[in-house]
Image (cartoon, rainbow, N blue to C red):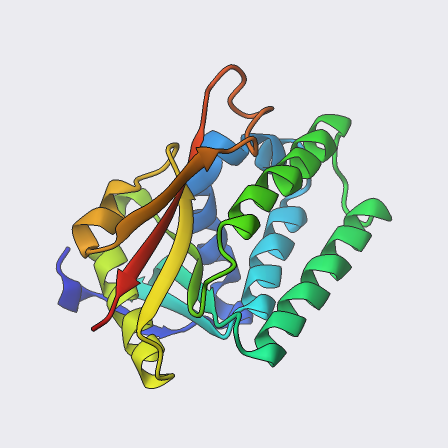
Length: 213
């Protein structure tokens, strides 16, 4: 599909959550299957909703009457954004600790391993002013949908007056998309987030920046 075949609009949780779930599973099942298969579906729904709550910008690309791709991002140098992200992340982890969600011991172990692994992404993202938190789509709609969403995000970043945008990704997903879009890789590091999902696989985390000048 071409760029113009998608309608880019704000994410509406009540309307788009199930479609966003399909995007999430389609994009990340291979590395997050312990959480998807061994925890109740509501848990993945809540991860998406938490990402939305953290974000300053939550966009979907709609085609054929449904959200087929999703992008979420925030501006960590803005104090209210940083505080909001910290509070929602802490609150969600407390809920996991309090066993709010039905999760097998395997899913819990995979989740906390992912949290520990994500510390590497946080440590490599201290310079970020505009950060893409989530970008994924349904498999059958991937030609052009990432570009359409990223174009909308870049436009919002420019409106905020920022000159660059950054993101973390890894070797288990399509990192080549970002390089084709114009992002430059600025860091590589071992990523231990997927110890349970991909046993024995050495995963590399990547840090990218797109200069908007």
